[in-house]
Length: 137
Image (cartoon, rainbow, N blue to C red; front, side, top):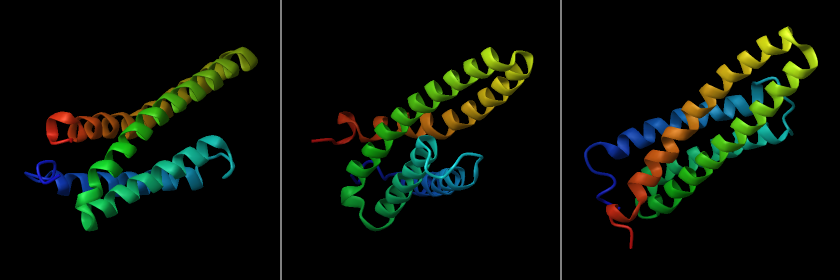
C-alpha cells in the first residue's frame, strides 16, 4: 500500500474524495428528487463511500486498497445506473412533451455529464491504482 501512496497520491486522494463526498452528499439531499428515491440513495451511498475512503487514507492506510477498490467499482456501477436512468427519463420526456421535453432532456444530459465527471474518473483511477501492478497480492 505504501507504493500507492507515494508522490502526493495520498494527498490528492484525500482532497478528491473529500470534495466528492460533499458533492454527492449535497446531491442526495438537495437536488429535486425525494430523499428516498433510488438515485438519491445512490448519491448518498457514493457520498458515504467517498467519506470512508477519505478516512481510510487518513487513519487506516493498511485497509485503503480494499476501500478504494470498492469505491472504484461502485463509482463505475453508479455511472452506468445514472446514465441509464437519465437516458430513459430523457426519452420519456421527449415522447411525452415533444419540444419542451427535448429541452428538458438536454438539461438532463448536462446533469448526466456532471455525474459522469464525478464517477468515471475516480472509478478508473481507483482500479488503476489498486490493481495487480501496484502491489496487489
